[in-house]
Length: 111
Image (cartoon, rainbow, N blue to C red; front, side):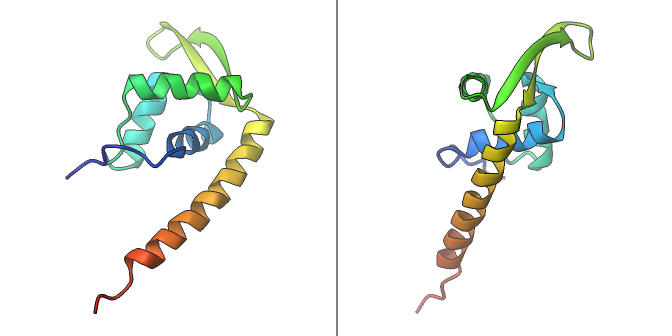
């Protein structure tokens, strides 16, 4: 199965926020959850994931705290903030509108 080389601009932020809306996770677990839930279609590199996490943290949409991971190593766990939840709702609505519009165009019958 082919993998999309790039996510639509801003989509990674939306996906991270949605994953963190379910529970606090560390960066590695976020990447794993994204791959798992997408059926191995979406995979994000550390070079994309961690800058996105830092950007979301600077924006105040997520917070981070150091604590032990499942294998007892120190890891940074990220959690969604109240402003992050509001931003997620707004971006989810925007994504629904955009994806519906794209689907309408893609489903056009050819002559």
